[in-house]
Length: 172
Image 1 (cartoon, rainbow, N blue to C red):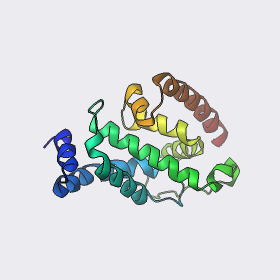
Image 2: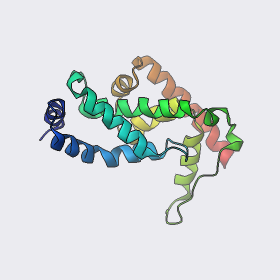
Image 3: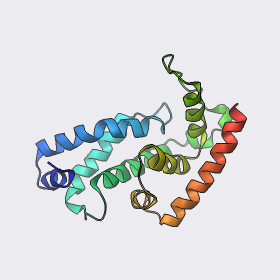
């Protein structure tokens, strides 16, 4: 069953379709959120909150975008809202941020280096980069997800690349 049909079934209250949609997106959302959230936040809470909204608003999906764009947009907004509630992450300087957990089985140190640089970017910039480069969404899709004009997303991407370039040179 296509994602559009699943969402239509969810809108009619079909719990099996909801479970199938949840299983389809759980891993993708977990990977998306894992690198974006400070350690005090859990991706599971945000995913659960995201899917509560999906359950409640499935009937409001207008088919202006792909289902994935809609769901990732919800997750993006839920994650930002969660981060805003935890103000201490916004008041810390980059030097006060906790050290990243290093997986001893990683093959490349560059991945850790890049993760650290991404982690230090402001949330909106980091999420725009990762939605496009990691998850393969277009500028237009990210604009729909974030409820911002495409020009704003382009500007954020430009700013994010510049800040990431600067951060990576200081992390070496």
